[in-house]
Length: 91
Image (cartoon, rainbow, N blue to C red; front, side):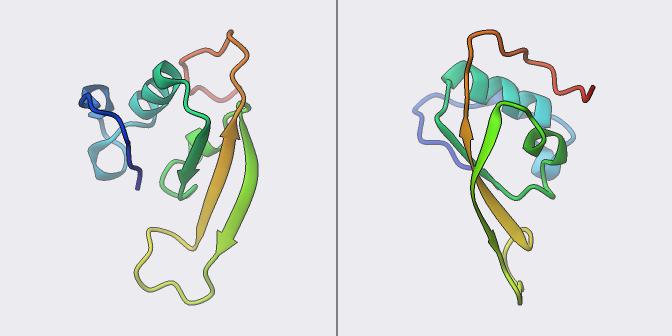
């Protein structure tokens, strides 16, 4: 699950990931907007959650999850260094 507080549509997110959003498209959108924080369920976006630009700040784990998208939700601070690539490939 993700949400945006921007006025323009996020058309680049269409893909084959969870709920039809690609991780690649989501990362490109986040990179274009230079967001400060990302809050995700890592099991929905496993490659995104492994990005070296994301620094974990807070993690919550639900013991008895019956309605949320995953047992864990994580808040990440994004560290932009000006040279971030758009690729989600794992090295």
